[in-house]
Amino acid sequence: MPGRRGGGAHNRCGRRINRFLEPCLLLLLHGGESYGYELLENLGKFGFTENPADSSTIYRILRSLENRSFVTSRWAEGDSGPARRVYSLSPAGDGYLQIWVRDLEETDRILHRFFNEYRNHMDLHHNNGKET
Amino acid sequence: MPGRRGGGAHNRCGRRINRFLEPCLLLLLHGGESYGYELLENLGKFGFTENPADSSTIYRILRSLENRSFVTSRWAEGDSGPARRVYSLSPAGDGYLQIWVRDLEETDRILHRFFNEYRNHMDLHHNNGKET
DNA sequence: TCATCTATATGCATGCTGCACCTAGATGAT
DNA sequence: ATCATCTAGGTGCAGCATGCATATAGATGA
Image 1 (spheres, each protein chain N blue to C red):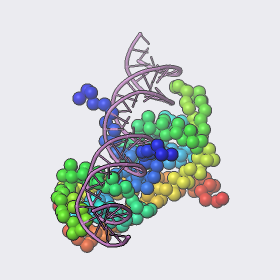
Image 2: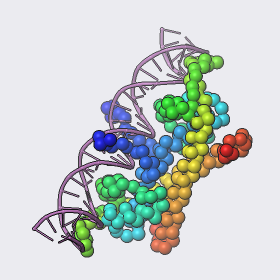
Image 3: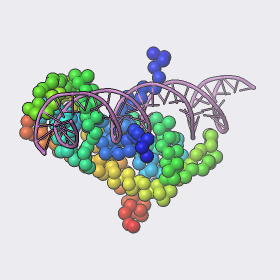
């Protein structure tokens, strides 16, 4: 299948929560300036199964954050290897991270309301669920 | 702005978690057969802010579930109003709901790993966070 | 007849994301 | 010198998910 191109989001790994990589990157940058390639490696902390995202997504999110003035960037000569575009969190970006956290907390509440509905329902019907 | 059309996903209400309406509908249908318009009203249980989704999304998800044999449908004359397309959960659909639940539990773990990273980081830097 | 509620459905635009691919500097091996 | 490989950043494309606008149409009551 050589013509097989694109294919969209089959791997739901990074897509469970919409734009989730964005707050992860903001949080990493809150710890100090960094650049795309390094951020990509540090995203492992957030414990997705395997590597969290394609590099293209990372670079695109970083540019998007810069367009909205949530980060700033400068070119820096690497000690070794090609030059790096180093990003720093701006005060506005810090505020945006706070907004993201509150948004994710709301997501968490929604998720748990679902779990409650589910358990409630399964308790009433007390069939199904796990017995094979 | 009369020409303003489309506009995509500005309202992130239903989009926090990807395809989240699907497991909600499956859970509702686990409680017994129902139809689009009624399901739309019952989605309120899941406590999104305001109404959870556009009706078009609901109808499309239901057809998509039917294409994958997770639900079956039949036409039923309403006691009042137009005919309804009544959906029932299939055994495969029940299994699919279980898969969704496990998937959402994984999403929950990822979310909480983020919260842990966040709190950890903010504890260390013990500035920022909430003091205005 | 007409407005309104119920009910289902389609068209379009936009946003997000993964895969394939491209460019290019640095580094070490052959 | 040439080449493979690692580092680093980036673009193009396709596909999916979704909200808004709109269309269709039966039922109901003013």
